[in-house]
Image (tube, rainbow, N blue to C red; front, side, top):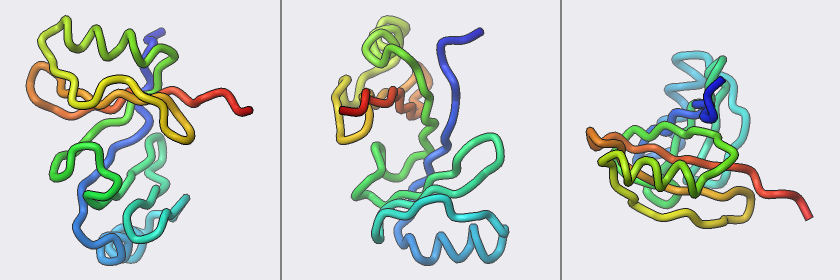
Amino acid sequence: MSDYDAKMIMLSVENLDEALEFYTGTLGMTLKFRDGAHFAALDGGSVTIALATAVDHPIPGKVVVGIKTADVDAAAKAVEDGGGAIVKGPYDDAHERRAVVYDNSGNGLVFYSPLARK
């Protein structure tokens, strides 16, 4: 079993309301979560489809795959050692530890691991 679990595909959008209308109205996806006018998560079946404006998108203008892992720091180092690049090194936000990277072909990835609740 892999140490990595692809859980989310993050799409870059300019207008969240218009994007939500397309994905919920046109495609019929269910809204799971919305954070203001800058981020929304949709039920994409086996993966979450996230829509994010530049406010919340880790690499605006790019499609980014969110990959859950137990060791964000090791994943970021492995990417760098394998010819990829770190965009934003491992850091803790309010809910999870993250690292934003490019793979060796320039594709965006976000490795994340939920933080222990206090």
